[in-house]
Image (tube, rainbow, N blue to C red):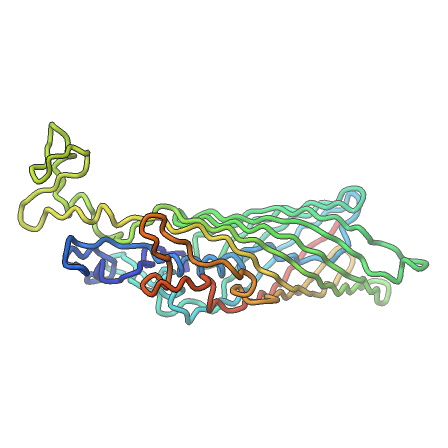
Amino acid sequence: MDPALGRFVVDQGCRSVGTGGGLYYNPAYHPTGGAPAFCRAKDGDFSKLVAQYGFAVAPSAMHSARSTGFGGFELAIEADYTSIDNKADYWKRGTQGLQDPSSKRFSDSNPTPAGLLQLYQMKIRKGFPFGLELTGAFGWLSNTTIFTIGADVRMSILEGFRTGIPAIFPDISVGGSVRTVAGTPEMQLTVAGFDAQLSKPIPIAGSLIITPYGGYQWIRIFGDSGLVDFTPNTDPVAACGFKGTNTPATPDSTTPYRDGTPVCSSNAGKGSGGDFNNTGVFNAVRLTRHRLDFGLQFRVQVVKLGVHFVTDLTSPEAANQGSDHQVDPVTGIKLGDKAAAGTGDNEFKGVAKQWTLGVDLGMIF
């Protein structure tokens, strides 16, 4: 389930699938009858993939509105299971499939992506005076090489009243959080969030405390790509039969300009320098998600068990109205899924709402 962004191209004809899997440059592809075409990034698919990865690694807001208290400390393990559009083409093309046991290459698609992304985290919470609380988190996205790291800051603005009129009101807290990922060179992903929570502890039999809670969370997802090779199994230097750069010392006889471009061999089977162009960067993705969360915590002495559910309030398309595909400043072509038609539809059109089910187990001191 690691990202495989090199498969996101506008026209699949720019490369071929080799024996045993793997994507190779196709120099015979001439869609306009001219020079061999190079691969162009399909930005719309990248946007959709970022939208769903971002929901999965976003801060879960899995906590009640009551802090651990002045000097309080919590150590917990959290498991989150997030739904994805695993039937969608951008998940099948955009994630690694099985590895060929002989060639050690991955296939050109992932026909059976998992239906859930599984995130496992360790979280440390520390309370301070005046209801302030800080949290550090470190996690791993199962079946990937992706790790997450982040921090939260939260303020309980109304908590702990047990008598009188204030005891009627629930605890209230507000907070901010951030998560970022490491472990994949193809994609940089950061998610910032703001949440507001309400909760009310209910003591039972003097030893068990049940705390239902709920709230709203706003998250902002920032997704960027690294430099992606769209034909990762072709060595451009070998395909070219590289002889040097187009300089006075090693001139290219086909052009009068000495511009430093690669000079390729004219030997049989060599001479194609087109694969040098088959790298690219996807347009940056910025989107907002609105989420509703609620959960239940059980505490006996210092041991705490919690269950948590979070879901989209609106679809990604509705939450990001006006977020049309960017326009190439040179050609004026609208990029992404609708590049050929030039319709410029919302880049998150068709991305389904998501949900996360979480469980945590911890100790509060």
